[in-house]
Length: 339
Image 1 (cartoon, helix red, strand yellow):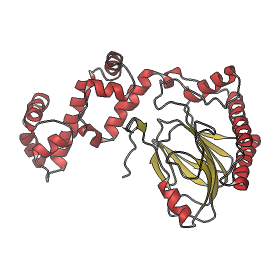
Image 2 (image 1 turned 180 degrees about the vertical axis):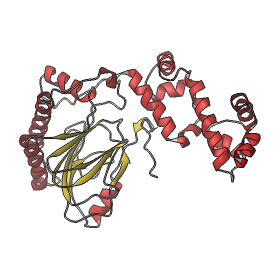
Image 3 (image 1 turned 90 degrees about the horizontal axis):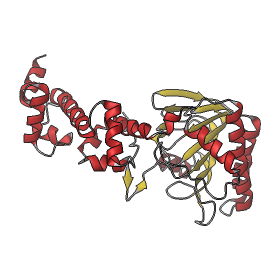
Image 4 (image 1 turned 45 degrees about the horizontal axis):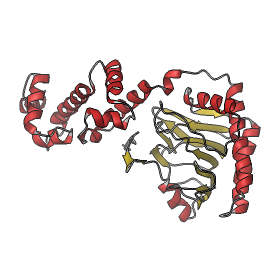
């Protein structure tokens, strides 16, 4: 099973996002044509620091034959918009799956794990834009780059439409598709020395056309999707999906910091979501995971299981386990082995 990407995994305060390594290897092997402008860890010709700040990646791939690679579960450093011009490509977001057809567009936010390919991609030409708007969590304030020339009212509306609606797949208008093709054509013709003025115009046109498309669909909005509570819910879901993250030495302060929330606010929201304090939730989930491991991982000692789920000592683990389950970990394992 693929490892589910951690939503708030950070290293030196920098968000750890997908680096498209499978795509890079395929391009180097001549399996797929890759044309892109990028910065950071994304593949493509390098963007100067002074040009189009906030633009993480823009480009396309062209796969003329069925591939032996795909982009496994990942998140991006910003809002990602893709457009499938030709072919068919499998796309998944959390527990939902789609088969994208020509004219389909996907929109994913930084906190939404998604996958392209099932597990491999098929024949097709896929365009994309990844724009960093300064958010990693649902409740944070979007900060659009200064080169975006939409009016303040339009930017505010676009932000609301994108942050309070999480529909991932859309059928787009011909004008929006044509704009993606214009961007890719400009990249292809200019190579490593793009006309930044032209690219700026095209990107603004793309954002305006995206706004018009969302307006025309009368998108239903849910303010809860951009709330602090949503941030806490996603953080707790991440803990449950990634058992190995339980081994981290979590404290109330570190959990609140990971969510970019104050300690008191985080604690109150956790209590509303789970009816438990953060520490109680963490302890209970660790115990439940340990109970399952006691029955299924007979090759591990009780102490090894205790440390694997995040308890600092086997003695403390045994104490809280007995209080929760009414017996020692060893006795629980023996009972489980006979059932």
